[in-house]
Image (tube, rainbow, N blue to C red; front, side, top):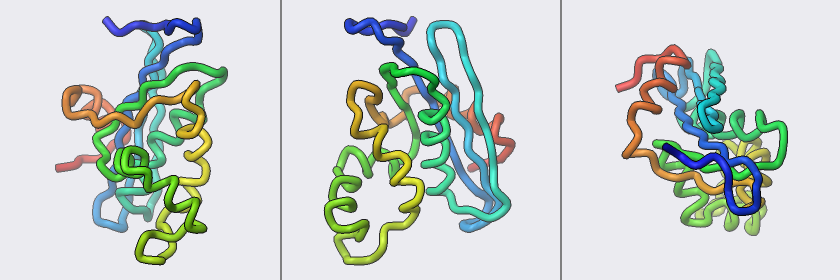
Length: 151
C-alpha cells in the first residue's frame, strides 16, 4: 500500500500519466490517474491533430493543474521526453537560453513547458516525473481511458 501522508502532513498524491498519437502528427490523446489513498480521479482528453510528445506533457500538466490544494506529488510516466526534461535539467537550460535548445533552435512545445515549469520548480508540491517501467498496469489503464491503441 502506498502512503498517503508525508511528514509535513500535506496529502501525498500519486499521479500516473500517458499520452500518444496515431501518426506523428495525428489524432492523439492523454490520460492521467490521480490517487490519494483509495480515492482515484481519472482525467483524459484528446486532439484531432497533435504530436506524441505534446500528449505526454499534457497528461502530466492536466493532472497537476487539477490539484485543488497544495500537496506532495509523485508523478510517474513512461515518457522519456518528460523525464529527461526534468532529470537532465533541459527545462532549466531552455529557460536560461531564452527557450532555445543547445542547438539554438526554438524549444518545441514551449507553451506546455511554460505551464508545467512552476510545478517542477515547487519541490514542496511535485516530485518527478519518475520513469514508470515498474507499473505497466497504470499505463495500460491510461491508454484505455484516452481511447487510443498504442504499440
